[in-house]
Amino acid sequence: MSVNKVILLGNVGKDPEVRYLDTGIAVATFPLATTDRAYTLANGTQVPERTEWHNLVLWRGLAETAEKYIHKGDKLYVEGKIRSRSYDDQSGAKRYITEIFVDNMEMLTPKGTGASAASQQSTFTQSSQPQVTPAQDNSTTDDLPF
Image (cartoon, rainbow, N blue to C red):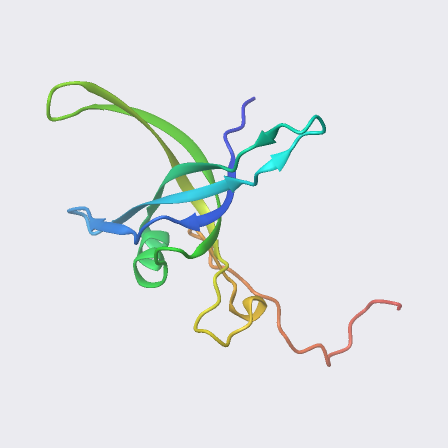
């Protein structure tokens, strides 16, 4: 048994680059930054802030959503898998790259300036199943005894 699962919460480094394959499938790529805050150890040693950059890859509906709604600086929560690959650059040198293939994404940046973050959160999942949201009307009776 094995598990390949990544969860990231960070800021988009640049607008998504979206391309469409010959079959019409959308693919979006963009960097996401996660930052560990600076801190001071008990002995007074200062540990500086550290930022990691992650290469995200989104397919199909997630890529189309990214193209429309995601911009540099936006805060995102993503879940996915780590994939590594290699390629030869223009000079013939072998290069290695690690990417996060995103399966699930939540946009956490509020739309506009006056919107609340809670009401503007949007969740997107790479799946063939439609996403079902519970009804907002709580006036109906339920079977709970309390």
